[in-house]
Image (cartoon, rainbow, N blue to C red):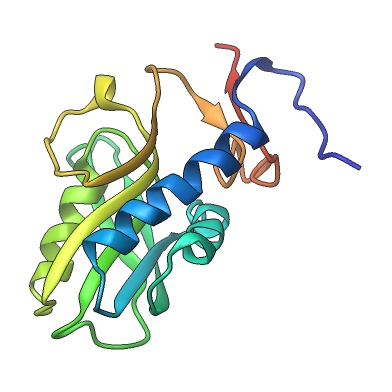
Length: 179
């Protein structure tokens, strides 16, 4: 039984088949880049969970997995793009090869904050892998070494991405209709 389709879906952007075909290709690129080393995957909760799980299975070298959660907020009293860590890593990343796994890189504010924060913890190397890259919305340029798909400047749900905490469980990525 498939997950319910939200009433506001405009179209499917990437099918489950397309996603499950692309992730092993990216996993092979990552395996080649880090051949002979261990890699620590750091998932950004909650959205990256589905992608990180599939990606970890597609990587052919030993991996460790840890998670962090962030809160981003903006209002009249704070600057746009303010981010803070709501749940930190369980283990140190000092001396580790680290791959930050995101569901989507959008404006770049969150990715920049996480890269700066994690770089200060002494990893051997630090890179980003994302399921979706929305470069059209980029305000802050960040290096995205591995990406599955580039997407247009539209609101998307599915495969971990949500709308009001719903629809993460969709096996595909869909574009929502504008309100």
